[in-house]
Every structure is written in structure tokens, then in C-alpha cells.
Image (cartoon, one colour):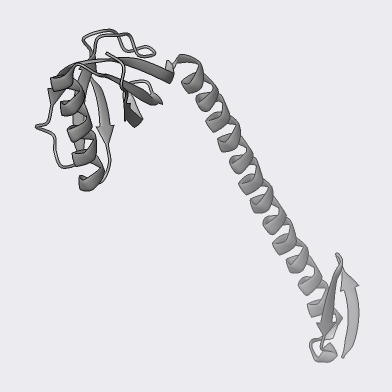
Length: 148
């Protein structure tokens, strides 16, 4: 038996099959190696394409989402019928791309949603403003202020 380096890979070959088998083995190895390289390049190309598409989608999503940096307003309507997972409400001010009188919603665990509902009801009954943070109509954080 003897050793050779073939395409950067150390190959051991047992000479009992003769030189014809060795040349077949070399051809088959090269075919397998080329197949692996082709499939690897296809995978890399696919991953890069998906990454580019997701970046483009993210860019447009951010540009048109109407991010709510910080909006303060009075709660004019509270809709608790989506509990325990969600609570929806309306403010008396425009919030990003959400017009006055359109629904904003908060979604979270049952405990988080109950806390947000309590905050919204307190603001509604006392006439105090709330400060909301979020993206589009989806609210991530809500604060009760002492402002009328």
C-alpha cells in the first residue's frame, strides 16, 4: 500500500486492486470533491441571498413602519376583550403612522397584560396622560404620567 496527496487530502491506497482501480478511485474522488464544492457554493449563495433579502425587507419595514419613539396622550378607549394575551386601546394623538381613533395594542404574558390594562384604566378614569413606546400599532412599553 502507498500514500498520496490528492486535492489537498491525504489518501491511502491499498495496491492489491491494481493501477486501473487506482485511476478509477482518483476519478471518483474528484467527482465527489467537485460535487461537495458545488453544493457548498450553492448553500453559501443561498444564505447570502436570503441575508440580502432580509436586510432589504428590514430597511423598508423600518422606513415605513412609523416608529413610535415616544408619544404622550390621553386614553380615549380601552378594549379588554382580547385578554389575557392582548389589550387594545386608542389615544387622542397620532402615534407614528397610527391615526387618532385607530387601535394600538399591547401583547405579552397574562401578568404583563393585566398590568397594562390597569395602567390604561387608571389613565382613562383619572384623565392622566400615558407615554407609549413601540413600533407602528404595536406598543412595547407604557408609562402613566402625572400630566393632565
